[in-house]
Image (tube, rainbow over all chains, first blue to last red; front, top):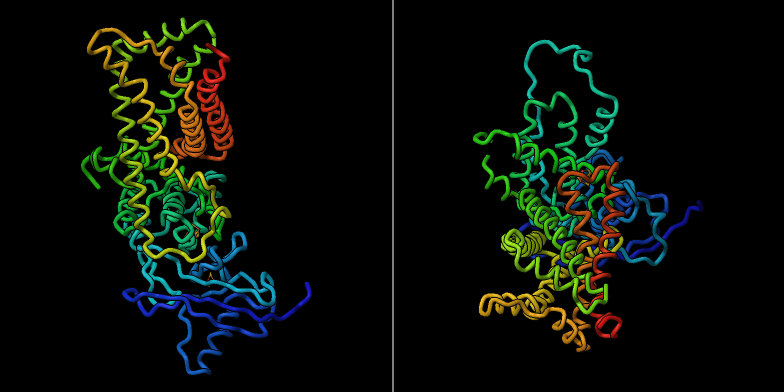
Length: 257
Length: 222
Ligand code: SF4
Ligand code: FES
């Protein structure tokens, strides 16, 4: 594709901290290359702001190659922009043309309070993991891997679920701000493996309870999460989480948890 | 954890919605079957027979109490989920994804459900309540066939019924699939099948219901 440059209007959400009221601020950026990534375009804007003596836009990013899940931006109504199974850092400016206006918002959910501008606090996810997303490993020598046979399909499904990068796009995209896709991916990848067996019955319940406590909404099977997940986590994982939950309900300990 | 706690988490509430929803789906099948007897066009003989059985059989009447219980649970739980979920994003997006990532009816279940509820209040007021009242006070059932024939001459009543069926159809398209997904059956192996059966059900049942006022109004049956 031919390389080209463009001038853009950006409407970016600015917010001082979680307590303050935010508002949109409009910026113009010039000579943006079609080869740039979306975050590089924001870098250009920030350099411009710094050289003008203004406060740069705060946004999260780390790996810039689609694996860390930090680059949360809600771009023109879409989590991580319009490309399928793509994080913001992998979105490239060839998506846009000269004269376009782009509206950039933070993830909006009460469980993800805004830290500043586009950066949100996703530690709620960490607390959900801490509530049950772990396995018990006894100390001592590592067990021979061949002692634990895992069926190929199970291993593949567990691996597919484990590709969740905890980016929170599912919450951002869900009309209910529910974290079910994330939780289902984390429950699934352990439920499918023998290593996850000991905590199986209480894991799902503890993680769901924590999800509720954190103030995420509840899942009504709308499916916007699956459509926006950069890692292609499937709704099948939510069905599995529901099965795990019902299993725990019917045969889990009545007194524990 | 005990039953009460299990049913009160967000997934527990979802299971309540699914189970009550499936019960209501079974009710729709029975209701539709009984009412479809009018299409024999035998001046309501078979319909009245079936309605008499439904109105007097002890087991059916006992189930009716359960039906109202489940219906109320479905409504109360559904509305409270709607308001709770609505409060989880106090600051709204300036631009939203709309239909790009999800279907309008799956996002509008509370609205569609409320429309069905409004229809239902009128429907019960017109047929169910007077009939039960007459059973209580006089020991006799009303001639529901005649009542239908009379009511469905009125244009706006037919209109409200058609609108009720329309809302029901869209509510079912999402609700049918959703109930099975909630019960954990949404794996690839079943998903296509459940969706297809769900869409078929959501078209056929409301269509049969909709045909009733139309048939009376246009004297296709009399
Ligand atoms: S499920 Fe997908 S969208 Fe949700 S946190 Fe994981 S990777 Fe991100
Ligand atoms: S910056 Fe790591 S996924 Fe985008």
